Image (cartoon, rainbow, N blue to C red):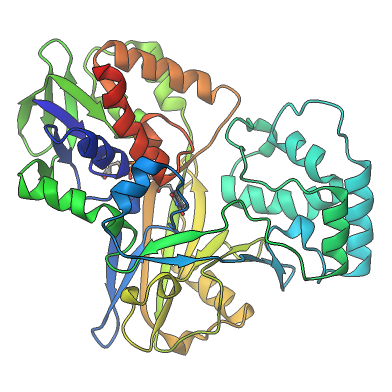
Length: 426
Ligand SMILES: Cc1cc2nc3c(=O)[nH]c(=O)nc-3n(C[C@H](O)[C@H](O)[C@H](O)COP(=O)(O)OP(=O)(O)OC[C@H]3O[C@@H](n4cnc5c(N)ncnc54)[C@H](O)[C@@H]3O)c2cc1C
């Protein structure tokens, strides 16, 4: 039997490529990080939330085709950021118009004086070399500490790609004189299924797998025996495999493998990531916010980002209602936060941003998504590659965001499952 561990985007991408595989998923439904959940309001109505923002901006033709069964909403959003109690068009560095003259002068001076000659040795230097000291101190350091929950000097830059806009001096100047600036966000078109939440994009693939009895829920792999080629699950079942793909996180899968070398175990234990603490609210009215998602730079608000499920699709909320979800991050090295404190801080944020009051809230939820973003330290890539090479030489093929241990978007996760089959077959 050919086996896939995990029915997230990457596992379903592998199944889409070869539907002879059998999928074993630890949860009771498919979707993984792209899955949705529901919350009942005080008066019994249902609000739906994704696990964090989730919109599609894929240009990959295979993924576009796979997602095409879902009717979708298409948006051209211009995102905003909450910074020093004001709304700025995102990204702030080339949209400083609402800031004080003093702020602009300091930001512009340091932007001009920044070091553009040396190669940055870490993420802190990278930010300093791109934006200058003042914007780093005021904006990039507080925000990125909130997002990455780690010392920026200890972080590598291999994951940065096009995630941060690097404006010219003309763009920074222009954006400090006027708020009529072009949208420089890296994705201009955002898409979302009209029905079923983000996971609705792969609903037809999941249904095909379920119909063919190829997807088995409640199967959490806990022991892999390489010589016998078997996987044992926490529910007591055991299966024999021919080919094994795993989208389980590297630290977890390494723990499962019998007789794995100690240095690989140590590498896996040292990998770091952020968990996402999600605070979700449903409102009894349509709140006054036009942004599908927005960033929060200010340190008094714990969340780094929020999005409105009700603006992604009206299918996510009862008629006449709206909803929001805040994303709060913490390192896997830190203790979990107090849920009550998180909820209270988000209510404070709603009031401060003038979005809603506590009496508007009719549904609430707090939950933690254990694996959110990978924290890239200097040696992370090397360690993860060593683990992946070891697993592959033992016939286990890691796929997806937490199998490849990479900052993959959902389309890239889907393709990592799809392509591993192409590559191993060829
Ligand atoms: C905050 C945040 C926002 C994001 N926003 C976007 C966005 O807007 N657009 C976008 O394209 N991408 C976005 N992404 C990325 C996207 O969520 C991921 O790329 C994608 O969900 C990863 O899919 P995956 O299959 O690799 O992993 P997962 O979704 O984690 O799937 C792995 C599956 O394996 C199962 N599993 C784990 N261990 C075991 C085990 N031992 N046995 C059996 N099953 C197991 C899990 O239950 C899960 O279902 C975002 C990610 C985050 C963290």
